[in-house]
Length: 549
Image (tube, rainbow, N blue to C red; front, side, top):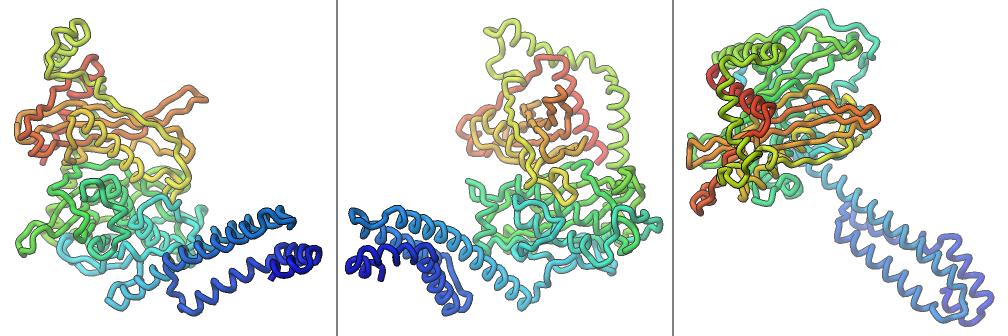
C-alpha cells in the first residue's frame, strides 16, 4: 500500500508511510493475524506455530528493508519501524511459548484428574496403616502450575521441589493464617507415622520434559537434583507432622539439622518411573527424624527389590518469632515396622548426642597418639623427601578442589534462607568432580555418610565450597571406597571473617570395568596433624554408626 502510494506521489507517499509506521498499524496487522490464528486453532498453539510466526514477521521486516534501500524514502523511519517489528516479534514469540506451556500443563492436569490423580495438596490421613505399605495418593510431579504465591521461592528449583513447596504453601496461605505476632501453640497432638506420610511420583516414562531435567550424561538420574527433592519432601513431611490446623497460633520454623546415611542400593535409571516417599519415624522434644525411600522397579518380577535409596533426615523445630527450640507433636507408632523404626531412631539420637559431647570436649583421643604418628609418618616423607615417597600414595591437599558463589534470591526456600537441598546439590557436584579427578575414571556414587547444617546461609552470602579426598578404603579390591569431604564456608570479606556453615561427607567407588582395565586407587595421607585428626574423627564416626546399627 505505502509502496504504491510512494511511487505515484513521493511526498504524500512519504507522509502516509511515516503515519502508517508511527501509528503502529503494521504491528496491529501482525498481531491481528496472530490472534486470528490463535482463535482458529482454539488454544492449540504449538512451538512450531510460534516459529512460523517468527519466520513470517522476520521475512516481512527484511523484505520491507530491501525494497526501500537506495530510494529517496526516509530510511530512518523504516529502520525504526523494522526495529519495533522485531521487538514485537520477540515479545510475541515468548507470549506464544508461555501460552502453549500453560495450555499443555492444564491439559496434563485435567487428564490426571480424569485418570484419578487428585490435585496437589497435603492430605490428612487418619488410618493406622504401615509406614512402608500404605500411603495417600502421590503428588504428581508434573502438575505444578506457576501461580503468584507470596511464599514461593525463585524458579531455580526442580518441578518436583516446586510441587512440594506449593503443597506446603497451600497450608501457609489458608484463610485465617496467623501472623508472626500470634501466640505459640500450647496443645501438642499425638500423630501416627502414617499421618505424616507423603509420596511423589516421577513419571519419567511418559514425561519427556521431566526426564530431560533429571538426565545425567550416563542416562541415569542426577543425584544432586534428587538431593534437592529429598530435602524438600522431608521438610514438607516434618511440617505436616507439626501442623495442628489451628488458625490462632503461629507456625513453627523447621530447620534441617543433619542428614545421616543416605545409601544408594542400585543405580537409578531415568527411563523408568520413580517414586519418593517418607514419613516421621522418631520424635524428641524439639527434633524430628524422618526416613525417606526412593523406589524404582528394575525387574518385572513381584519379588524384585524396588528400593533404590534410603535416607534419614533430622529437623529441629524453632519458634518462628523467638528462634528458640519449641516442642513438637508426639509420635505414636501403630504397627511393628513403625515401632522398630522408632527404636532405631532412638539409637541414632543417642549416637548423635554422644558425638556432640565428644566434640565439645575436644575429642579427647583415647590412645590415639599412635594412630596420629602412623598417619603422619608417610606424610612427612612426602614433605621432606618427596623423591622417596610412595608412588601409590598422595597427600590430601593435592586432591583438593574449590569453587565459590554468591547466593542469589532464586536459591532461597519458603523461609527466605538458602535452600538446604541447593547446598547439598552443589556439594555433591563438587564431590563428584573431586572423585573423578582423583580416580581418573568416572566414579559411582554410593552414599552420603553425613551432612551437618551448622548455621543458616542467607541471600547475598559469599559461599565457598572446599573439597578433598579425606581417605580411601582399599580392603575390598573389587570395590575400593573413596571418601570425600566438602566444607562450605560463609565468607564475609568486609569483616575479614569466615565461618563453616555445612560439612558434607560422600562415599564413591569406581565401576568394575575400570578395575578390570588395571585401574589402581591410591592411598591418601595427611601432611598435618589437623588433617590427621579429621581423618581419625571421620573413621571413628563411621565405626560408631555401624556398631550401633
